[in-house]
Amino acid sequence: MLRFRADLKTIAFVAIYFGLVAYQWIWAPSTLWLAVPLFVLTCWFSFFGAVATHNTVHSPIWKNRTMNRISQLVLTLTYGHPVSAFVPGHNLSHHKHTQSSRDVMRTYKTRHRWHFLNGLLFMVHVGGDITKADFRYGKAMRTRNPAWFRQLCIEWGVYLGVTIVLLALDWRKFLLYFLIPHQYAAWGIITMNLLQHDGCDENSEYNHSRNFVGKVVNFWTYNNGFHTIHHEEPGLHWSLLPAAHAARIAPHIHENLDQQNILVYLWKTFFWPGKRMRYDGSEFILPPVAADEEWIPAPSETPTDVSLGAVS
Image 1 (tube, rainbow, N blue to C red):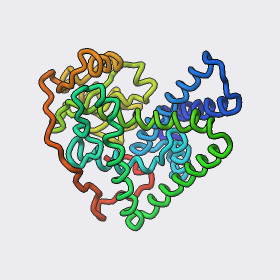
Image 2: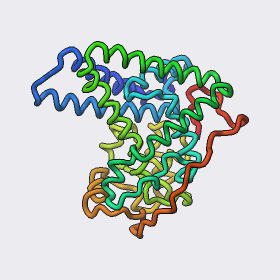
Image 3: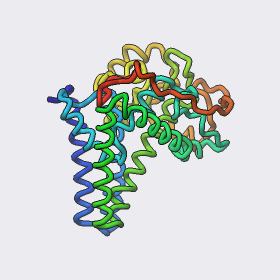
Image 4: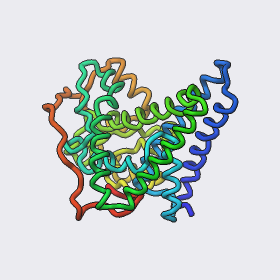
């Protein structure tokens, strides 16, 4: 029933996340040598759940629509936010209007002189605008696309229901094993936007996105380091991205936009020398501050699929 066999990894990673949460909730390890690694792993696998969420709103996991709706409920619990809510800010705002005033996640919103703070606080600067846009879109879809709105409400209901139960059972465990990993996942998936677009040329055919092509990072993040080809063909399944990048992007893109090691990039970008630069090494000049423009599609352009797979 899987559309691509590669999504066995998605299922495995999601199962590991729930296994980690269940083990810690039941046994509550207190020795640091065990408790700290388990907590870190839980945060990481919650983030991997956020990446899987990103994948499924572009290219659904299952051939069966009901299975996709169920998987969206499961993924909602891995990173702490309804999967359907990923669609407005990401698919319909960021992808369609990258780095423009209609992109609620544009990197120009963070403007600290110390670039480390831009990376650390990017979510703070864009989170409120994303939430407002999500509510506006949800309100519009209540009548335009009742099936999508109903799925969103179900996902919210499941997440809030589980939250209330876990909070009532043990608020300390809830914070440590459920809420904090979810906050890390949300911070990580939103901050990736800064890494993949800041200092790039949104008007270029190929140089609009930064790629992290190392094998290790792409093993854990479902090849999401290959970001340029993802923008060119959002519905392309994540397992096909490396080959498509090699054939269609690598021969044309600026060499600085294919980063081999994400840790090296993070060190150079945010620590030493830690300067905010354009992808070609030239001076980074922030455009004037601009308010968000309306981006919600007209009724005739409203997607009809609940999972919105392959929406650019």
